[in-house]
Amino acid sequence: MTFLTRRRLAGSAVAAATVLAGCAKDAPQDTFKPKGSNARTIDDLQRPLFYVAGAVGLIVFAAIGYSILRYKDRGQDMPKQTHGKTWLEVLLTVIPALILVGVGIPTVAAVFELADQKSECVVNVTGQQWWWEYDYSGTCGGVEITEPIVTSGELVIPTNTSVLLRITSRDVIHSYWIPALNGKRDAVPGRLQTLRLEADEPGIYVGQCTEFCGLSHARMRQAAVALNPADFQAWVDNQLEAYADNAPEADTLAAKGESTFIASCSRCHQVNELVKKDGTPVLAEPDLWVVSGAAPNLTNLMTRTAIGGWTFDLLTEDCREQLWNASPEEFGSLYLQGVWMNTDADADKPVCFDEATLRDWLRDAPAMKPNYSDPAKLDSTGGRTRGMPNLHLNETQIDELIAYLLERK
Ligand SMILES: [Cu+2]
Image 1: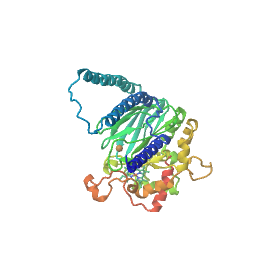
Image 2: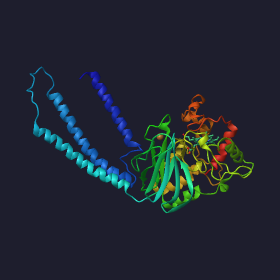
Image 3: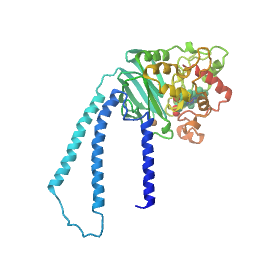
Image 4: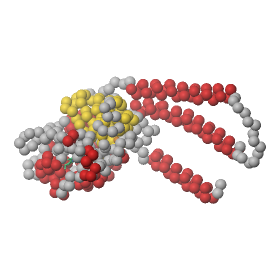
């Protein structure tokens, strides 16, 4: 071995060790750390399989290594040529067959176990370029959901409840995956596939779309947020609160924001119960403007911690750290406070609000998340966009919109 190849080998080993150490340290999407019963079923299967496959792999590599060294061409005579050895062939067929049967039985059993459960909550999950929509109805973990709740990016579920996701897509194939809570399920247009999530403890469990789905696939993320039953009830109550309770007061910046919102945003985005000056309801018509036919419901925008395919934070970095590192006992109350976390009772500004990110989004969303809204490319979509277009708002309009959106809590 030359000095150079030795140096290269050492370099690769260091690089590999660094990557592996990185994986072990701060890895919220680690499949080896199940945080719920479904993920545990998978983990109980994958660990023994990993060891068996690992041992087989080591044996094979050792045999190859030995043969390479032992039988290296040193100019020796050609060995005696033979053909066929029945007992060896039978043995080398039977051993792998037995291993496969040994692996197959628990695998099939686990597949059935994951599919065969009662559902204590049903959420419709729709993937599209490039975010996930959640639509709740019925009862969820004993909590009555009297009106449909439609939200995006962040799936809120009660702990220790078997939540059935009914997954589909509005455009291309996506794949839903929260590694700590279960395996993946493809979201296929025109098909409904199910997946169950169950979380042991309150907390935030992150994932991302795992089927390449176009330009901004890397910015299509998602999270499941588990709350204890009392906090989940509080979350549902808040989602169902009447618009009037958070409607802007006359002549405020937020009131101007409401008009700007109606003028510039409501053709794509719904805010439930919003009405025009004359009292007629404001109804979004996203199918006219967006290829997928939907845009996130913004009624309770500020109850989420991230936007734009759960990629851009609404919480400042410190507050996000605080929430993510919270103990299961304190997590729920921090989450329900959202951007108002750490705020004094009489301060008017939410200290945890990452305003700069939302401003950037409103100023030019395609700059943060490429989405083909380039006019030259719009022809092929009949003028409709994928994702949020740049609406060329001025800074005053953005101020008004921020004030208005802050009240969507
Ligand atoms: Cu996707």
